[in-house]
Length: 328
Image (cartoon, rainbow, N blue to C red; front, top):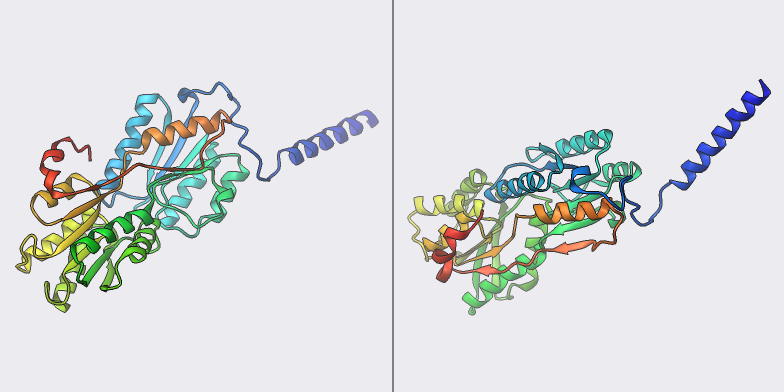
């Protein structure tokens, strides 16, 4: 009996020591159990997609799924329908399943601390994809995506060039609280010349359906070419919705200076048709980068924590030539 109690005590002590050694802290990633020889065949990756609100998002989903198929990794995919609580529930389900990697495209910036901490405590690295989060960077492994502030700055520079004598613009912004909307709005205001005023700004939630009535309301309140001379639109899908409203109001292509963000096929067509005068690129084809980074994390390799995509600004003069080759 004494020997049994002594053995039980030693087991408890050993367990406590192991728990202490494996506790929290800001240590380097140690990788998965297969490290340093993990392959994509070993990978189970969770992707709680925020929704399917735009052509950009559809292309992003396709890139993730196609890459998973190409490399032979197991993908656990879900669609949160633009609801943060759905994304958090999906993440918790993946944590419970013990996935190797979680890649999160967050619908909004705030409110992720608790679930990111849960993933970290479970030893599951989280890659923030596309949009940003306000949580401390120690709670996630890396961010892959665009510089949203720079996108807004690039849009502002187009207006500065087109409207040297000043004027007024409207802004159709993205989902309130999202990293894309916050960053683009910040960058736009950072660089916009002081003689150009933002007459009004309303959200279209990154969708065509919601942008249409917002643009209709703008047109009831303001006269195109008189009260405002341009429109900054946070993504191409909202831009297409806005064009519908402009057409119905009798506005002709080229009457207003319109700059959008994304560089989708729809945006290129809008340039060809004379509606958009510039389209700031935001590349959705992030699948290869996400999976490559995930494998490095599994193998405990040193990684870059901020990975930004190389992007440009497109113009109508070569839109027709480039349109057939656009992948999204």
